[in-house]
Image (cartoon, rainbow, N blue to C red; front, side, top):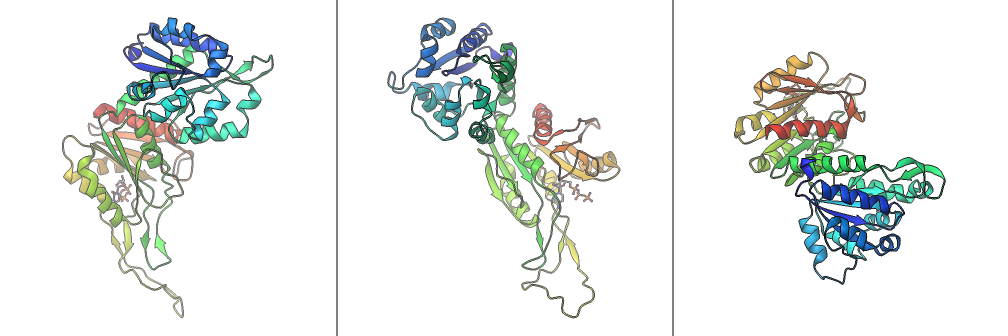
Amino acid sequence: MGTLAGKRIVAGICGGIAVYKAASVVSKLVQAGADVRVIMTRAACEFIAPMTFETLSHHRVLTDLWDEPLAHVELAYSADLFVLMPATYNIIGKLAHGIADDLLTTTLAATRAPVLVIPAMESQMYSNPILQENKKKLTELGYRFLEPEKGRLASGREGIGRFPSEEKILTAIEEILTEHALLKGHRVLVTAGPTREMLDPMRCITNKSSGKMGYALAEQARNFGADSVHLISGPTQLEPPAGVEYVRVESAEEMKNAVLERFAQFDLILMAAAVADWRPKKVFSQKLKKSGARELALVLEKTPDILAELGRRKKKSQILVGFAAETEKLLEHAREKLKEKNLDIVVVNDITAPGAGPEVETNIVTLLYRDGKSETLPCLPKHEVAKEILRRVAQLL
Ligand code: CTP
């Protein structure tokens, strides 16, 4: 339990029957060396007296916004992690809608620490689409949720909504604390999506990249505690992750300018964009008419190779990760790119394999390192692939 020692964990205790189990979690966290500060909502105090948490945490329990005018700010800034348990329908709704009407919600509004939400409630409340919508919104904003378990509920009914086991909660807390420290002190630049090379005002050359891999990398880099994450993206249908600086570009040329302008300020650069290699040599200012012509021959010229340029400019302190979408001779091509573009890692995938490629939610990647070693990850959802890549990259940093 070394990860918990000395960490300040703010336990936000809400009014649900599982509050007595939350008391036991607080006790375990304190035993593991964490500095636990407890905030209870009014409803929580209806279930259990603050004295219980005061005794377990060895600190005064805070319940009222008006007791100490700056308590919320002090806790918000000093926390390494917030744990909301049991998270009620009400607190999840308030959080998702920016309501700060008591000490707990006001403190949450002021923090940048990761927040672990542990819901526990009757199954029909948990499956209510309003709660699910709020949960989705909060997840997109970076809040972590631990799923409740199925089984006997306080009402005597069976269903989903049980407070998870202490063991699961402690593992989740440890994982978040470990992850959140991985990219602390680092600045991360990610590119994503396709580029669009115009032929005339209507037509363009582009590719099938969805941007999902790059967006997942930016989102996870934020979750891993990076000081700053910038995402430079070509045209995609995706929403930029919250808390990430977003730059939208169209062409390879625009992406190059956006990347080169910022490159020197970052120590980790992940070039996940599927940059077009070719663009029409002549761009027509008016829409091309087909009148009379039987054929149209296009002359294409090469776009700038952004990554190769970064490889030339790279300093020792910078880690450069390239991506290679291949259809054959994966490792051979990846090895060439690693060498030619002076990369630290190439992430290569076979876009024709089932479970990999631009249009699916999963990916199967192989990481190739400078020392010639390679490692193939199993088929995973793209956000999990992003985590695995960042865990490995963080070791190089
Ligand atoms: N890349 C880039 N600029 C380009 C083309 C590619 O920065 N004009 C980057 C991509 O973002 C990716 C890596 O280079 O990280 C490899 O891209 P890929 O298209 O697989 O390789 P290419 O070098 O373009 O070679 P080829 O298309 O011949 O496989």
